[in-house]
Image 1 (spheres, one colour):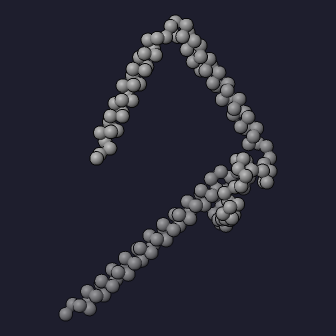
Image 2 (cartoon, one colour; image 1 turned 90 degrees about the horizontal axis):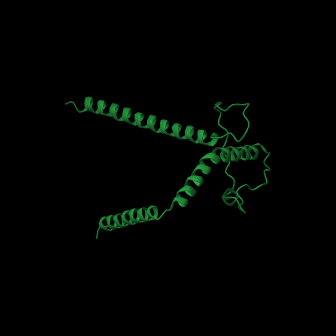
Image 3 (tube, helix red, strand yellow; image 1 turned 120 degrees about the horizontal axis):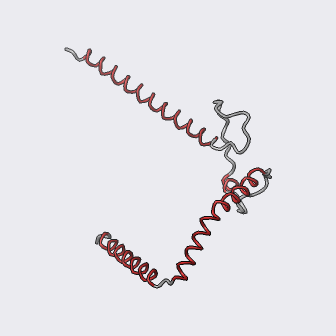
Length: 148
């Protein structure tokens, strides 16, 4: 049995339920309910920028404070890295990091991982080209040897 007819039936049922629920909800609203909706939506639109600014202020304060290395920020009792053992990534000799930056050095490990992946891809490509060149030279030699 195919799942497609069942999915179409559910989508049709959901769309008809949504349409009937919305139409019945809107038809039952009084003028008092419309005024209440306008006040709530208008209040949200007016207060939202201030609330976002306030949240940004608290977030900036949280990012500026010194972090205790023993503090567990996520609230978890044990971090996953302590269960697996700490994996240290050796520093890369590429100097694309700014020496004067402060903060968490966002993206440092991602850049390192990307460089390692690109190096491995380049090495694989060079190896493939070397094997092709070797196979071509073998074909040329075989061509001269079999020419009788």
